[in-house]
Structure formats: C-alpha cells, structure tokens
Image (cartoon, rainbow, N blue to C red; front, top):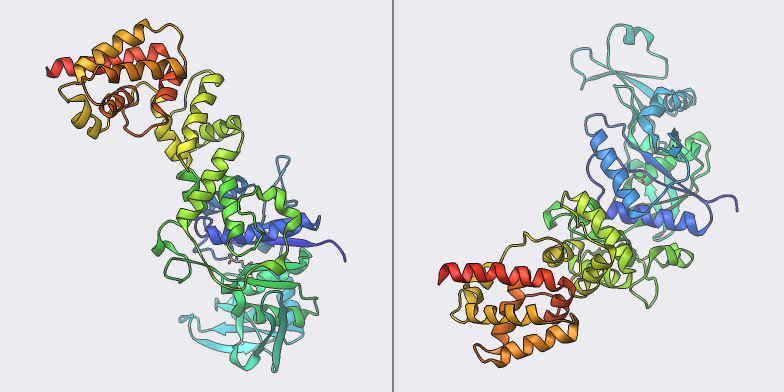
Length: 469
Ligand code: GLU
C-alpha cells in the first residue's frame, strides 16, 4: 500500500465543534498510526459565510487539541493550512470544470440578465458573448443515468439511484466552486486515501463519487461516522448548550481530557477509560468505531478531565493552569515554584476542571480573596467568632514548627476550649484563611499557606469581628 493520506477540511463558518474535533482526531490518529500524512484544508469557498476569525479560531483549537498537520504553504517556517479560496485563484477548479464540459459531463447555465434565478440556456459552448453582455453564468454537473455505489468502512455497501439526484452546480456565478465539487478536486490532487467524516455528509458522497468517475479518478476509502448526539438524541448543537472546543477550553477542560473523552465517544478503545491519546495511536482501528450515535455527556467529560488533572505531573498541571489563566484573561500567581506545586497538589484532589482549580486555589495565591456570604453570616458573625479568633491568633503566633501535624494540634486545642463546637471552630478557621467553607483539608491548608499568611488573615478577620462588636 502506498502512503496513507488523510485530511480535515473544516468550513470556517464558526468555532470548532466537538464533533469536528472528533472527526479531526480520528483522521489524525489513523494518519499517525499508519505513518502517513495528515492535512488541514480550509474550505472557504462560501464567501458569505466564511470568515478569517473563524479560521483562526478553528486553527487555534486544533493546535490546542494537539492535532498537527504535515503539509501546507510555508508560513514563517511552519505549515499553514491549504485554503480553497487561494486555490481558486490558481484556476485549479476551473481547469477541471472545463475538462468536464469538454466531456459533456458538465454544462454552462446562462441566466437572464435581470433575473439571476431564471436560466435561459444550458450549453457546452463557452458562452463568451453572454459573459460580455453581463449575464450570470454557472457550471453544473450532469448527473448520469444509473446507480452510484460505494463501500463505506462503517456502513458497508451503499447504493444510490442517480435518478434521485438532480444536476448540481459545481461553479457558482461568483466563479467559486461548490463544496461537493471542490472537495473531490482537492482530495484527488492532495492524494487523499481515506475520508473519515460525519454521517451528515453521507448524502453528498454519491455526488462526489460521480465526479470522481467522470474524471476517471480513483475513489478514496470513505467512512461516515455517526454524529455526536445531545441528551435528547438529536445531533449535538447549540440547543444543547455550548459545543465548541474553545468553550470547553475556556471552562478549564484540559486538552488531554477532551481528546480522551472524544476518543471514547464512538471508539471502543478497550477496557481502560483514561488514557493519553498519544499513547493509543497504535491501537486506533477505524473498524472498531461504533456505527451507533453516541450521546455527549458533559459530566462524564468533567470526570475524565478530573482523572487527568490528578494523573499528570503537578508541574505540568501548574503550567496548564498558568496558560489557562492567561487564555481566559485571569491574573496569574507570583510565587515560588515550590509553593505553587504544594497548592496545586492539595487543591487538585477536589476538582475536575482548571476553572474549579483556579477558584479553589485563589486564596492560596492571592490575598484579595473574598469571604463567601455563608461564611460571614454563619461563622464570622457568630457570637463565638471573636473569642476563637483571638485565641487562634495567640496560639498560631506562638507555634514554632509549622507543619500539618502542629497546625492540627493547634486547631484541636482551640476546639477543646469549648467556646464553640469543633465543627464551628474548624469552619471559622477555614473561612478565615480562605474565605471558603469547602477547601482542601484544614490542616494541610494552614500548613501550605504558612504562618505569616495565616496570622495576617486571622488579624483581618478579627478586625471585622471587632468592628461588628
Ligand atoms: N467542509 C466540509 C465540512 O466542514 C468538509 C466535509 C468533508 O470532510 O468532506 O463539513
């Protein structure tokens, strides 16, 4: 077998949908497994709907997913994507449209000068005069008689009656090719061997096969993958909530977590559910992709992500944490690496996303944390608060060795004073040093924060209780 070549061919008309990311992932996995090539091609021939912002967003998301491509125009030492709009200018699509017309497998349609919806003539002749007179012209593919067959790697033998398909436009009046036509020209010229894409394209495939046949080109292998569904089993869309890779990135899903989860959606990787996708490349087998629709479950995604948050090296997680904070425009911690790693290590036990990690670790990294209202109402404003905090200030100030064990001893002796119940004392302390009532273990929290911070924070809380007294 020659070189295996796959591609991902998004239309830049929005963000990268998780379904698109999964399609890209499956194509990429197969290319990597077979030591083949993976190509990114931007299908931007719909001038009304395509935007540069969308193209950038899609490329950023793919890069973030770790999906890299092997070819493309040189952009400062890196590979840019192929763009159909640039290929239009090279006359590539026109060239083959003319070849089809010569074979009488496509024809020009000339429209009324004033009514571009009204065709006046179909012809194989180059309509020079009509063009000069300002008529709108399109080129359509002439659907031959008979049936169109192909083999789908998931669905098996497919057969379509050509009589159910009408002649279709391949070059629009603006001179740009349509999707079904451009995709064939490019897949052929880019020597694509396998096309894995969403099932929503299944009805386009016979049209594309007819063009391959008309040009006498070899047809690639096709696999149409069932769409990702929402909880109501209709294709996952905005109606179900956010669906873009960028969104999941912004709420603090790790790229590893998202790729792991998307791989699980429809591909039975084996028993193990949590893995680094890069380590499963060799296991990727298109024939083990399920032919059933799979439901996107954001909770499962978070669960998978949480597993990754706890499995990766704390230093890496801190790197992700800082990148994510910058990406979402949040401030980043300024502290020693040692301190940051302690914070990350105790906080990650409790959370599944970077965003939750940010919130939980905030009081460890920054002094401007705020008190939760519940902490104020139920603990800080309680009658015992001032007494307990005064004692706490005294005990902690006198504490010499600062460790998890010694802070625990102090907390327990504060509870033994019986000014308030143990639970109340602990919650009061917890809220005092973090503003929150749910945090990592209290003694660990105190230990990580360190003596100086703990004392300052008790003093701050005390100043509130005194002002209320
Ligand atoms: N531009 C098409 C899309 O975004 C590509 C489909 C294909 O892979 O052929 O859906």
